[in-house]
Every structure is written in structure tokens, then in C-alpha cells.
Amino acid sequence: MALATPLRHLLSAAAQPAAASPHDPAAGTALTPRAFAPHRGGRLRSMASVPPSPSAPAGPARARVGAARAAAAGGRPTVLVTEKLGAAGLELLRSFANVDCAYELTAEELRAKVSLVDALVVRSATRVTREVFEAARGRLRVVGRAGVGIDNVDLQAATEAGCLVVNAPTANTVAAAEHAIALLAAMARNVAQADASLKAGKWQRSKYVGVSLVGKTLAIMGFGKVGSEVARRAKGLGMDIIAHDPYAPIDRARAIGVDLVSFEEAISSADFISLHMPLTPSTTKLFNDETFAKMTKGVRIINVARGGVVDEEALLRALDNGTVAQAALDVFFEEPPPKDSKLVHHENVTVTPHLGASTTEAQEGVALEIAEAVIGALKGELAATAVNAPMVLPEVLSELAPYVVLAEKLGRLAVQLVAGGSGIKGVKVVYSSARDPDDLDTMILRAMITKGIVEPISSAFVNIVNADYVARQRGLRIIEERILLDGSPEIPINSIQVQLSNVESKFAGALSDDGDIRVEGKVKDGAPHLTLVGPFSVDVSLEGNLILCRQVDQPGIIGKVGSILGKMNTNVNFMSVGRIAPGKQAIMAIGVDEEPEKEALKLIGETPLVQEFVFLKL
Ligand SMILES: NC(=O)C1=CN([C@@H]2O[C@H](COP(=O)(O)OP(=O)(O)OC[C@H]3O[C@@H](n4cnc5c(N)ncnc54)[C@H](O)[C@@H]3O)[C@@H](O)[C@H]2O)C=CC1
Ligand SMILES: O=C(O)C(=O)COP(=O)(O)O
Image (cartoon, rainbow, N blue to C red):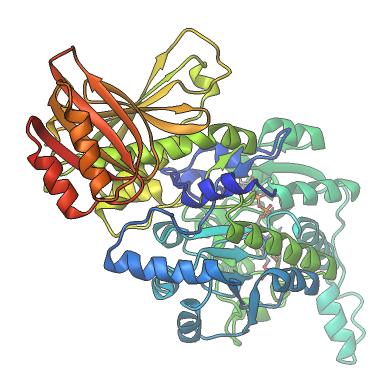
């Protein structure tokens, strides 16, 4: 989806908590149910954008990252493609970026190249490890996996590096399902073995008597996209289908006429077992001595998922002792498997070299799907297929866009009010809104506040992919609260307040009665405004930079400060005074386009009756 420029720009700076791979619900911690949500109505998109924050502060690491990203943003980006990709996809990539196709790179060669590129496109053979992300030195913004399985990409390292990972989850589904059916039939009828025998000059009709499929029970382990397509096809062959998938919706199974059963029931009652789950920590070697022992004697197994879900030595033992009559394997723990692999050479095993996705049609589709996703991500658009960023509906995002800017600015302001040395741990964000809390997803706002707080005080690059991770690393605890207002729910948010607790402030005027640093803002006419500092109400547009002065409310003081700035050639774009009561404490919030000369700030500080002042960069 092409976004209007301003929104794209916001997205560039956006920060959002990372989600774990949707492929491992059991892995738990960071996973959001939204990551699994099927695309309903309007397409669910994940928030993902990567270009540089316009307000990134300086620092050695940041300078390096910023320079690399800025260099990339200035000209055409560079995309490294390390495995063969369909021609149309390559062409699309070339229309947008410089494309370097370099196949069969060693790990060392990949590390050397990756710091020179903005995006990397791989299939299953390239291992995108933590070392690869480290070697990228902040330039790599997106990894595109031209296929489904992302077990070859270190998602945690990608997230930590703020690098978006996108995949192409749909274009090879049918190809993989067809390959599973091809292996199922070939195995049952000994096609590969008989073919080899005939070509070796033999005519062994009685040796290669097969088994029929009709009426047999097929257990599908992993009832996702491929699993359900296999089920549909196997039904057409007259097989009874059961499936095991702890996370699959019952309705989807019912619609295809498949019973979802427990793992034990599936493996103990099937004649054929076809594996279609992802490789994750919880599925690694799920099929092992113990589970083979529970299977019906003479079961036949097909694996078009990942070699790692099977303990290959245990499978070999099960084949040798007859528990497993036959296996058909497209995938292996190590690819390619060792030349002398006993499994590959076993007479009851049919093998193919990871060909599940390898049809002309699937490869063209996958290449186009990934090229579109990578280009979109490089442009800072939303990515529908991000695997390490959460999903946000585009319409939700466009509605919240001005609040996204406000949230980051409030975070930046609040952190700059903290006196040096005091560590921020507790952040409270209070949203006032007339909208039902269930209709207001503040995840992106929370992430932007994190970005605003973290970036000015660190060399971390924070974006939507790594904001949550960065906050956790720093022990930053962000609590969100809602104040439900009466009024029109049309406006999503009335105000956002950011409170930093247990810190000292360099500007006492920003402290609330509870001793927290407190700033609040609103969106007015689409622009972010600061509306509260500590106990003082102000109204200043949040653009450029800001000077806050605290004084005793008195005639003439505004003119004095204004004339100092005027004399020093500093353009004042906005000014607002907030006071508790006439003649009492007041603060002046002055918006200035550029950073005033040191001398001007010194003179403001020396102005009689100015009790304190602070200069803040927005
Ligand atoms: N051999 C090849 O060339 C290809 C292999 N694949 C592999 O096939 C597998 C499935 O791909 P898709 O169907 O597209 O993915 P998918 O994400 O649509 O489906 C995977 C399903 O596995 C389920 N699952 C997760 N943990 C499970 C567990 N412990 N037990 C049972 N089910 C579990 C998930 O809930 C999900 O429904 C992946 O491993 C993928 O990498 C996919 C395409 C081509
Ligand atoms: O999409 C998948 O998960 C696959 O296994 C396909 O792998 P490939 O892109 O053919 O190396």
C-alpha cells in the first residue's frame, strides 16, 4: 500500500514493540495474538519502517548508523540477493534498487558484503545469523525471505538491530502441498525405488508392490497453509484426514471436514503422517524415539516442513526396526545432508533435495511477493508480511499519525528535563480519550514514547521493530493508563501525558505535586502542541526547539526575554505563558526555530526574576 508522504515520514521515525515470530506460539514471551490474526476485511498490516529518524541525536554509533542510512536514503538503495530468485521479482527489485546477485557466498563473504547493502534477500540456504547483523553495522534495514520458513534468520538479532524481516508466506503454499502429495503417492507406490531399479536393468514387479491410499488415515501435523492444502488434496484421494495443531482455528478444520485431535491421538492412529509445522525451539526433534514408539507399526511419514523437527537418528532406528515402514523426506537437519547419510540411502526412504517450493509458478510468485515487500519496507511503507513487527490496521495507523508525532516529542521533552545522572525506570503514560479503550490501540504511541525517551540519551537506534526490546534492555517500565472522557469518540485521543517518576529534574517547574516530571500534549489542527508542563498550563506548538523559563509573574519579563532572542537573531515561532495565579509562579514556553547562541541562553539565565530556564530540542 502506498502511503501519503507525511505518513510515510512518520512511519520512518516510528517505533513499536517487536513481536516474536508468529510461527512459534509456544515460544511465548513476545508473541502478540495480533501477529496471528488472519487478514480480515481491510488487510492487516504490520507496522514497519526503517529509514532514519529525522531527529536522531549524535553519538559515535548513531553517527555511523545515521551516516549509512542517510547515504542509503539519498540515492538508490542496494539489495543483495544471495539465492536464485524468479526473474520478474528480480526485475521489480532492479526497478527500484541496485541489485547485487551473489550466490553461494561463504559466511565470511556474506558478512563482508552485508555492510554495503540496505536489504538482503535470501531463501532457505543462507544463514542470516547474529554475526551477519553485527557485520551489517546498522545499514541493513530489511531481510526478505523469499519463502515461508524463517528458521534460517536470527529473528532476535534482527529485532535487536532494528532490522525488519519480511517473508513471502503464501506464494509457495500450493507448491509445497503438491510436493507433499507427490511424495505421499510416490512413497506408497515405491516410484523412486522402482524407477532406479528399472533404470539399473531390473524388472522387479513383486518387490515393489505398494500400499493403497484410499480409506487410510492421514495425520497432518501443523494445520496451517500448507497443511490445510494437503488435507484438501488428500481428501480427494479418498483418505480420512485428522490433524493436530494447537493453534489452528477449529472452524477452518471443520470447513475442510478435518478433525483436530491431540498430538498423541494423531500419531497413534495414523497410517500416514505428514509434517507441516515450522521449525521452532518447541518443534525441534518433536519426532523422536519416544514419539515414534507411540505410532502404529508400519506408519509412513512425509516431511516437507523442516528436517529439524525430526530426530533423524531416531527415524533411522524406527525404519530399521519396522516401526516406520517408509519415509519421504524433502528436508534435512543439515542441507545438503552428508553424502554418506544412512537416511538418504535407506531403501525405504524417498528423498528430494528441498524441492517443496521449487515450481516455476511458485518461484515467480515468491520472488514477486518478496520484491514487493522489500521495496515497500525500504520506502518506509507498512509491510503486510513482517515477521518481527506487530500488525496494525492501516486505517488505525493513519488516524493515529499525528499522535505518533506528539508521543515521540513528549518522550523527547520529558527525558531532556531529567537532571544528568538520574536513571529513568518508571514511565507512566496517561491517555485521555472519549473512546472505548477497546477501540483505541495505543501500542504504537507507547513505542514512540519509548523512542523519544531512549534516543536522546543513548546511541541506540530505535524503530518500530526494536523499541520494546530496547526498553526492556534498559529496564524501562512503561505503564499506560486511560482517562475515559465524556464527549465524541470521533477524536481518538484528547491528550497524552508522560510522567517520569523517581528522577530529579533540571527544571523544577516541570515537577508535578507528586514530584514526577510531567508533560502533556494535544493534537490541534493536526499539529502536536505542548499543553502542560508540571502544574503549568501552556499552549505551544511542538516544532523546532523550546525554551522553558520559570519566573514570578510580572509585567515586562516576556519582553525582556523576547528582546534578548531578537537581538541574537533567534526567531521565536510561538510563545505561551502559564501561571498558577496572577503574581505567582509562571512559566514561559518559547518555541524557537534554531538553537540560540550560548550567549543568548546565558543572558536569559541572568535576566532578573528568571528563576530557572532550560533549552530543549524537539
Ligand atoms: N519444503 C519446502 O520447500 C517448503 C517448506 N515449507 C515449510 O512448511 C511448514 C509450514 O508452512 P506453512 O503452512 O506455510 O506455515 P503456516 O505458518 O501457515 O503453518 C504452520 C502451522 O503449524 C502450526 N504449529 C506450530 N507449532 C506446532 C506444533 N508444535 N504442533 C503442531 N502444529 C504446530 C501453526 O499453528 C501453524 O498453523 C514450514 O515449516 C515451512 O517452512 C513451506 C513451504 C515450502
Ligand atoms: O518456503 C519455505 O519454507 C521453503 O522451505 C522453501 O525453501 P526455498 O525457498 O526453496 O529454499
